[in-house]
View 1 (tube, helix red, strand yellow):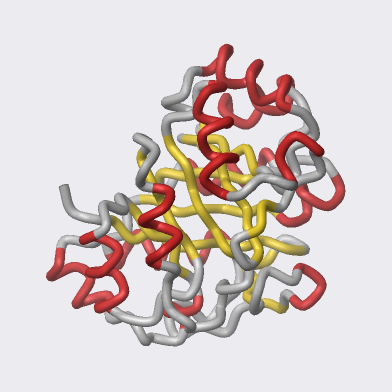
View 2: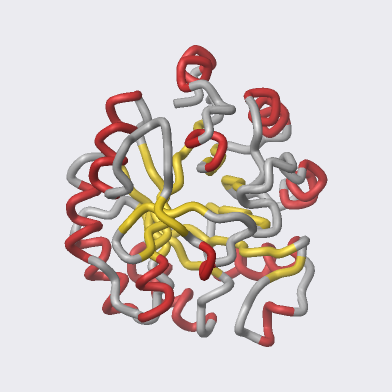
Length: 242
């Protein structure tokens, strides 16, 4: 099966934003050749018309303030398959988010308050609807929890897989928007664990995607390279990466 490219929509103040290295205070509405508007719905309409099948949504407003934007998720999910990181705080929010049509719910190590919540969400909705986001900065796990934050990425991933996760997004925020290239060594380390692996951060070109595919990555999250056109949508389509 071919690797798939999944466009990223980081949403702040209701608009699609872009910033380097995951610094949320620095997010500004995106300026992109893809779409003259930074509206999430407008961006999704364009991405769908180009052939993309799925988007990754980080709801930075929900992550910061705690209220998932259910109306937004519903509007996006009616147009394209959506995975959402809402900075999940409760099982009730998980239920509401999935009920509006979100395809997969992301639980991120950076914002997850306790492992019990992860266990409850996995038990209630199953690993097919829930993805772990292994959030890193310079290969260090980002987490509020003492059980996770001092672990290396591989040990952390193994611990979370024991809870029931079967799919993981590995994002090193230090590489996001950096055009520094993906961390192939980290990918090789994480591939020691039998999970579906999605990566994000640093992708510059088709060559980077081919290298990630060779290492067994199943999907790649991309934002800056699409908006700045260092990745050609025509090339992605020709390679079967859409």
